[in-house]
Image 1: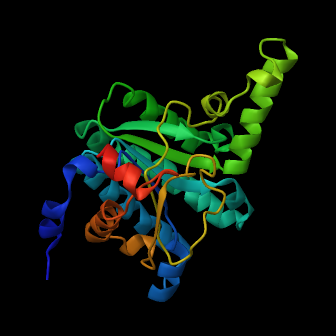
Image 2 (image 1 turned 180 degrees about the horizontal axis):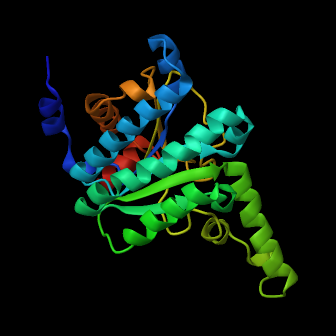
Length: 253
């Protein structure tokens, strides 16, 4: 049986995903199975974030985008939301020294002003402290939903039309994308969702038009380096056609 190192050796470094997005699902169910509180599952999930960030950096992946807290998550019980906000602030502060050592840059995506002040300050401090880093860009989606993002882009363009700076006929797909929260970030090559659910849950709907989707039953706290490498190996075995035929893709290569 292959070891994790064997699998890493099998990776084609010329066909690595540039951008990996993840839906980190299963913390609550993991805790329930262990007989723990849901907050324990979220705390354990922080360790997985640490692992996937380090491995992404080690493998030379340029962008890692994590769905850390959705707009819909505000509807969860107040105690759980408070715990999540505390963990997000605590974790980013705890991880900052290693992020700096690994040359990882923090980027925040979402309605960040809605985050409680203490957690928001820690997030902004980490973002500012890593602004000079040139390695992996870790995009944290917080108080984020894709419909919010798309509506926000539409509002920005509508204001430009109202101000007479552009006409409706000027609006292209590229212009719309330039007004999304992910402006300047390439679309994900690979989207991984843990926890066994096979849906997108209002995440990067515009950006994943041609992403490869990978669903695993493994709960987020149990998602190991080996599981991550398995997902990348699966990605590398797929043919990405972007609307073209197999023959066209093969001729291009």
